[in-house]
Image (tube, rainbow, N blue to C red):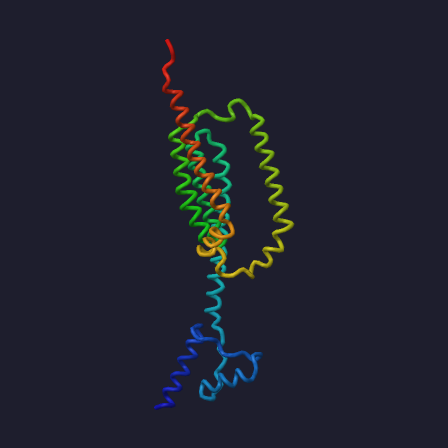
Length: 245
């Protein structure tokens, strides 16, 4: 009876090892002591080597390939959506439509953050920027009143030319920095711990190392809200004045 129970127990352990539930048996390079300990735990009988099922391995390869293709497809769609919505922000003459395009831009950025395994940054992008901040922007636009004339009606001004030149210089700088400095850092990205990018990790950095930048950002948002209210009050006061007879 005991022999039958031990045989059944050994078969159950082999099945669990086959499906990856239990730890694998020691390999040949791990030493004779480990192999002897493994044989002693199995009643002195050497366990047969587990041969990989070709059907199971083929299914794993197919799933991994399909997953990689889906990730690349989502990345391409999100990248083009980010670029298209960014161009739409500066192309619409109505600021309300520009704000809606900016919401799409922030949402596509959140998808890119998710693909980079930055769940907290993606959630903050949606909740804070695409949610609270854009609601404030829409409130300011509705309070001041939309401007319907096109900024390019009188031809490109020196401000538009300066903006294009500054954006081009910034793009060149980003490409140079990524090409010169980011290569070595990305090569050692596997040394980063699993807690990197988690809510606890980011919150600890916000309230310790980057507390000043965090508070300055909140002050900038407060100043923007106050400025929008002041501009709206001045514009309404100018429209409510009755012209003299």
